[in-house]
Image (cartoon, rainbow, N blue to C red; front, side, top):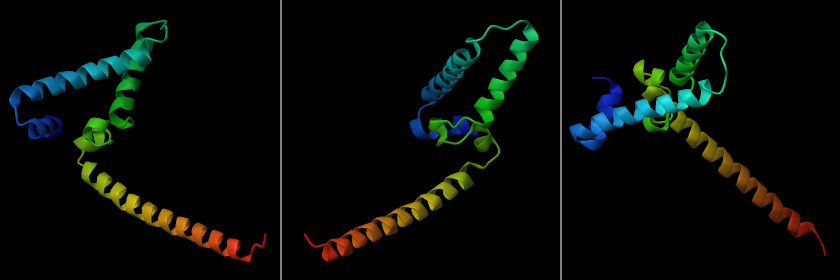
Length: 119
């Protein structure tokens, strides 16, 4: 059973939801593919085949999927999901501390400037 299947089985706790979730994912893939691929006219079947291959690589390797934690399906398949999410969480904490430090300095500087400005 794939990670994708286990993920939805754990969330739902019901077997029938697993089939529904997988069908939904496939339908979403087809809709995205049609939106990208059907906008162009292709001269020969090889061009179409190449474009479909390009889209599948993009969909699996580049495009983030919200349903699996904003990582790519390749990240999940190759076991990189947890490390990516941990790195993001650490980065988020660092950014929040930097933002807090920056905002406190701005407020302190404004207070100092207001003290020395005479009206």
